[in-house]
Image (cartoon, rainbow, N blue to C red; front, side, top):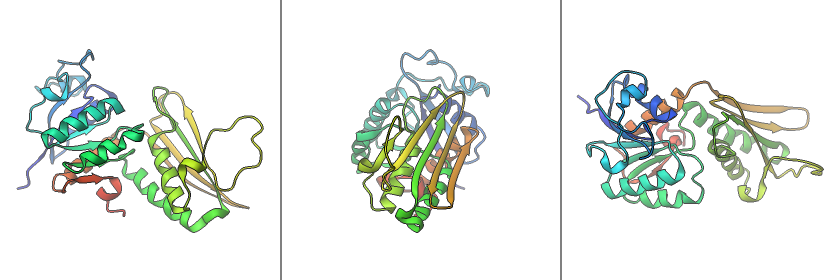
Length: 269
């Protein structure tokens, strides 16, 4: 009989945290062990199941990672970069695995890479299985189409998202730039306004939309002479990200130390 993976949740009272609690409660191979939120969050002390709207589970939401039951196997973190970096340090010291879906990490990625020397980590800007398939399709399309097609990346999210462009859009740009032998830092163009002149064929454009309750839409547009190819993913529920994170958590249990992504989890490399 296989042993169930024991999971703790960072940001347990947030949107993704509540979604994870709901999905874990129905998962046959994963058990919810514990969870915590920001120490000033009013949700701290509330039963984690009641916070998620699924009924009492007998697990109060803690105020920080150090208050967790030490029996968890994997911490799942969809919080903010500052919180994630603190959690990375704590998990590294405690020898705990992590699944990180936090976006906007930027240069702090080096801290995650360093922690991978001591613990296994899955770090991905998007945990959706469909999005990660789109990553692969975008790479294949870029290699096949080359410099004859202009590349634009359009993303849309809810009004409360604080980083732009999204981590998923940035990752799409990085993948396409690598496939085209370009430097994303040099060729990225973020929005356009005014008299911009003729488009540089070697640029990769990013357009950002924020509004309403859009969970997450991403389109890569390859525009050539007389034809266009579009690769689009639309998320209608956060369950798709939560499901991918749980798949990553189960996969991670038997892995050696290192930093992985969903391409590894899904065997898409």
